[in-house]
Length: 400
Length: 226
Image (spheres, rainbow over the protein chains, first blue to last red):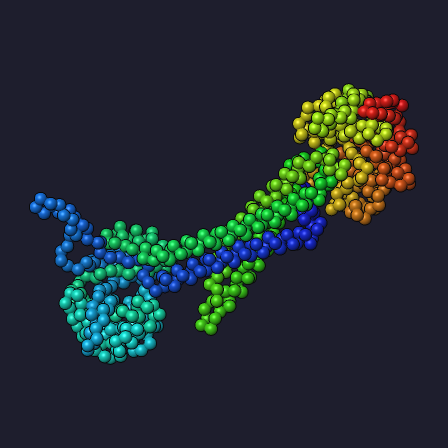
């Protein structure tokens, strides 16, 4: 075995130009593999970060009212059971205590949400209210840093509104506005700050106020409508949502459920990447196989003479498979190195705003997979030439 | 004592419906320590016989015994092992491995089954190279050796595993007279010192004349033994 490896090494070294070109071909295919992997992973990370950076990763809400079958005289009817009260989490402090035990939770805040009419003179608009504890304003996404006018204050009768809403209704800082809820609650507020997040739905129709200010508007003296949770790793959301749902008896929704289109896009993107990676691997296999087949043909007489003095078919097989493995391993190593350098350079190119031109992730290039798959692929590719070489008839080869 | 005994060897080749009988019942016996010339015109079947004796070709019928062991009906692995350990080959063209030095070429038949060139192998290969007058060329690759030197390396390689029988197919066919004489003298010298049996297939009467015995073939049969 050791001697067969030595022979394989000599064969590869005997024609440095041919071996060099073969290694370069394998390395370039690996660079393509690494680039595609880094790009797809980078794109996925970018999209997930963009999406999850601004939203809560798990939402805990009161369980939906269950429809029950009721007997109404002689007929059966299906009606939701309702107490006539708004859905709410009454014991949210208890739920927060349970959530706080989870080490992967970095923030959890109670929130009251609901729709109101914002009235300003003759103008009116439907606005979605978020009632938060003032010190948790930036717990899920940073609003303070997005303030373009005024201050990020939501204590007392002060609210924050989005820039588009302010523009649409001609609202300015300090101006009084009236908010009226569907529960009949009505209150006068003063605009303390105007924010611009770049997210249309937030900038166009959301008003942020304190939790205490939201209570009378929505007739929720003690409860909240939801608990928002932020995790250190958004990928844990599905598992943790199931767990927290069971522990709190609340309806837990991970962010993925509300962003199914993103998941579908990422899956489709991943499949496309896999297809391109497969093509890269196939090109490696074809390249290595054809080069070794050529080599086995060129060395027919040598193999014939080896066989004539009793070298086994297995020994000849090992010589060629070892060449395939060496080409694969060295080419893959070279390709991984070149690929990392290439994607690192790409990652460092930024536009005027400081954002990457291509969202490649240099450390997510699938280097281990590229190395293992390329080496295995090259080993597989060498089997056909190895069999061809091992089956050479020594007499025929010597007489040529 | 006979090293190799072949009895009633027949070899036929089939090409479609056409059957060509190249060997038509050859009987032959080689004694230990003799140098025998196998002569005959082209097409007389001497190369085919040599290939059968070297286990590179299977006879259609007949028996073949090497040092008391029947060589008929053996599997590929055993045949390879016998070729490696008990037979040596020298061909008209040297067929040295171009990517290995003279010493490595000589040691190759021992190194391949053992998995590497041991220090004992190196010593024997160096000794053989010295015997064939190429001690100072041991690290040279074949491309730096002359035709005669290459053939001498091939002889040293054939002797590496101390074979019972060396089969040489026109070993001087590609050499000039001087190199040819050197190669033949070398074979005789090794025969004398190590007692190795040689069967030399040749067209050259002067080569045949320097052998202990001459077997003349004609039309697939042994015509006469002299």
